[in-house]
Length: 450
Ligand SMILES: Cc1cc2nc3c(=O)[nH]c(=O)nc-3n(C[C@H](O)[C@H](O)[C@H](O)COP(=O)(O)OP(=O)(O)OC[C@H]3O[C@@H](n4cnc5c(N)ncnc54)[C@H](O)[C@@H]3O)c2cc1C
Image (cartoon, rainbow, N blue to C red; front, side, top):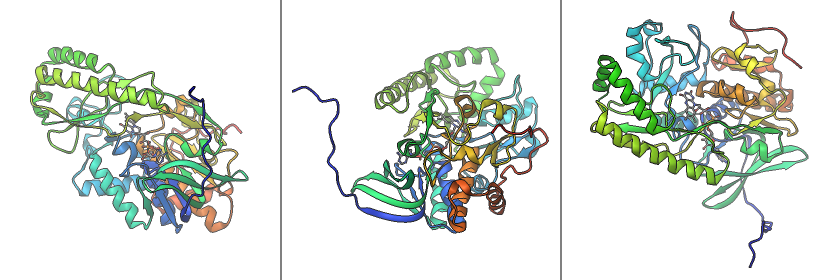
């Protein structure tokens, strides 16, 4: 019998398991922030996540440095991101350079570059050491759990978004796949924080398809980091040759292929980078996972045999989720451009900021679907702009802005698209987050395009 191109699925009644004010889909950095901000603003909130833990790329993806947090000496990403950092510090699971080390100098560089606390956008060496935070992925899961539970959020893990419920161009909730079968969750406002725009795209919101390299992040245990650093500094030429060979085996890595973590002897490796994979395609993601693990095995064999400090290392873990940076990008009420980011354009409806750039509320608002908001790496930006404005801290501040916006819409009885950005900014300030309402001296304040 010939294989049909499609099959018709049987229509079915799906049980409604939850009805709430604000439903956040995706429990990564942006989603957790959105959920907590909405709950702290008085809304009833449900948060659904496909995996058994919160944190997204910051935990399951083992992306272990919070960066893009400063504009010169000013810390610009504040609010819930700062609160999570404080909680991690109390557990001894976050490390950052003290103020006196945040400067240019070889001594500061030697102390902090292998923590990933260098300004990687600066030219030349040594790059300035800046405020950035190295943290532990299981610690991130734990503090995310704590903050979500304390906020009274209805958390539903193991729930994979499957379909939006849309009536008359207004989202009413979503259907998720679970071990108990399909379940419907209803809400007055839905926030898409899936990172891949799963909800908004399925609901019909205009979007573009971006792409960027993917990475199979991993950690090594039992590394003698002191010995490795001594060798690097005392034998720079031999080090450079071994480093070149290691990177060749990885087939794609940043300048430093390993970085320190708060756990002694444990390093994280933001590599191997792999290009040409579409992270929305099962076939590509399967190939990428296997190719990533193959390259890791080759690197580890080499490092054990050749690289001082790595003789007794072992693979501690390979990230349980592939490092996907960019897939679908919302084309919302405003699409942020690379120029907006590099020129630091300030907008009349700025509601959040990252590093030295600003995000307008319109970039978090889909077109064509009511009562839906987005936050995180799939926000409305062009591909080049997203590549330089999607780090964890700014995604968290975006989430916080969207969370307070959702709650404000409900408390004031207006559609989410009609919430006054000035009210969002006031609510952000009240929650301890900098909404970017006061542009820094280096911001471009010329009028934004319509
Ligand atoms: C390899 C790599 C290295 C990076 N390095 C850094 C760095 O050093 N510092 C930095 O700050 N940033 C870094 N980034 C960027 C940063 O990690 C992401 O941009 C950021 O985590 C985005 O947060 P998010 O909440 O938007 O998305 P994500 O972290 O992707 O979270 C999305 C969440 O939604 C869930 N989800 C997705 N689809 C569904 C569904 N259908 N149903 C239910 N749940 C769903 C996911 O499981 C996840 O929990 C890096 C990214 C990568 C990939």
